[in-house]
Length: 234
Ligand SMILES: O=C(CO)[C@H](O)[C@H](O)COP(=O)(O)O
Ligand SMILES: [Fe+2]
Image 1 (cartoon, rainbow, N blue to C red):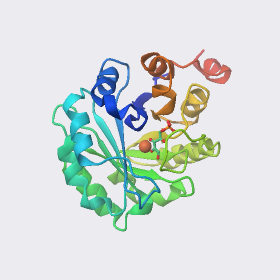
Image 2 (image 1 turned 60 degrees about the vertical axis):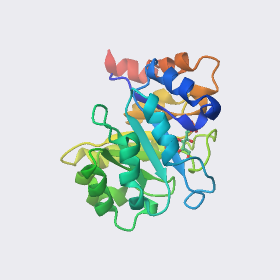
Image 3 (image 1 turned 45 degrees about the horizontal axis):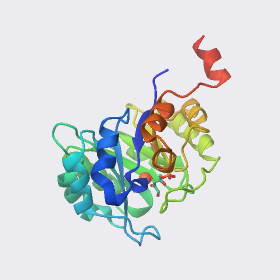
């Protein structure tokens, strides 16, 4: 079984020690650095914006996985690409919310033109079928397993069924976008998420609230498979 890609969310880091926490991720088994941008409109919370993304990028050695929880995200795609998401040696991803885009096809094209992977996030209430006509235009689907806006929330269990539905939808597609899951992810649900079809996992609180964040990342990546997964591999 391929281990999942792990994207620790900097939202749960110590903002007064951002360089230290980015360097911790650089030296860990994290694959990407998840950057949560919130505007206080699309979601009821404000996190940080372009200058903080630039600061993270200055110290990062891993691709940035920028999650834009903002209205009309097309206004800021070029800015976040320049702020590090489109780094030439470690190109990352820019993910916009389906619910925030009037012209989703155009916005995904705009993201790819910057050199980044193009991602679409779905809120818990948005059905995966809404992506059927843009599958060729996206590189990543971000399934929200909490209502976006805050770290530290509880995982919504219906997410597992949603990932399975998306896997089925992608089975008929000409190329296969990465399935990433975001919200309430920890060692207690990683095996079920991978079994359902997740390729990449965002983890904020379960990494940065752990006594040893490096070990928490390792434990997510090298999780203990369920009995069913073991049987399938045997
Ligand atoms: O997009 C997000 C919130 O809207 C965060 O990426 C997510 O909540 C991660 O934090 P945690 O692992 O603590 O749930
Ligand atoms: Fe996120």
